Length: 250
Ligand SMILES: NC(=O)c1ccc[n+]([C@@H]2O[C@H](COP(=O)([O-])OP(=O)(O)OC[C@H]3O[C@@H](n4cnc5c(N)ncnc54)[C@H](O)[C@@H]3O)[C@@H](O)[C@H]2O)c1
Image 1 (tube, helix red, strand yellow):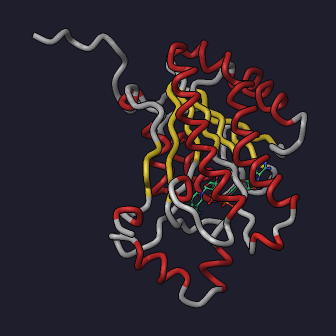
Image 2 (cartoon, rainbow, N blue to C red):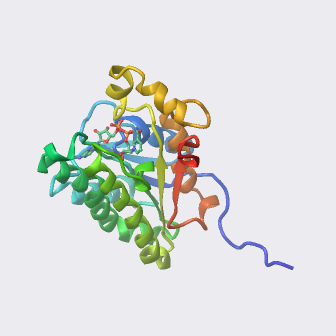
């Protein structure tokens, strides 16, 4: 007969301490709200102050040299540790490759990749001390395929998946899981102008989904939060498509 499981199970997040970046808008705000609803204490971080969701909030630009240390310091002083890190903040510069400003390339790589690496490393001691540390990164369907006009973004999101897999191996021995969600087209601040100002754009993306609609922030946030629960304890190094079926077909 199989041995009974001697490990924590369940979806309860009461008292867990979470850091969520990009918590003022879109999927980050939805993830922070869901974590709060599940009983977690949340440090919401964003570069804009308006609307950050969290038990505690911190205005910090992940591109600034001293932000990473301030976030780690706030996790320690305000939350008393960190069990969950949701590396959600991201930027999406777009336009023809020939005209791409180096600043756009640097922003995509700097915020979407380097800041994720730095913040994860800064919070590593707290996540290891937790005994059930969880890192949830945000890749994209663009972690799997490429598109014209999105060279820097596509490169950055491929890197997020690679970072996720390598860190899963590196941090596994400390009891930390590392995964990423790979959203499809989601109605957030990032896609607002595309969906509202480009005729037919929203219908085009809805039509590519098996479910006939674009995603809402909560569609993805709920999966991020699942990955932070004890029930997700044996999932690590994965990129999970949350795209309504867009990637099922070509
Ligand atoms: N919306 C989509 O269709 C879609 C699809 C796939 C992946 N994503 C990814 O989802 C994540 C969340 O984006 P969203 O769609 O919710 O967009 P959003 O623009 O609504 O939210 C992103 C948040 O990140 C914050 N942010 C950006 N740069 C920052 C910085 N330097 N420092 C601190 N905060 C910063 C913004 O202020 C904003 O509040 C991003 O990583 C994005 O690349 C989005």
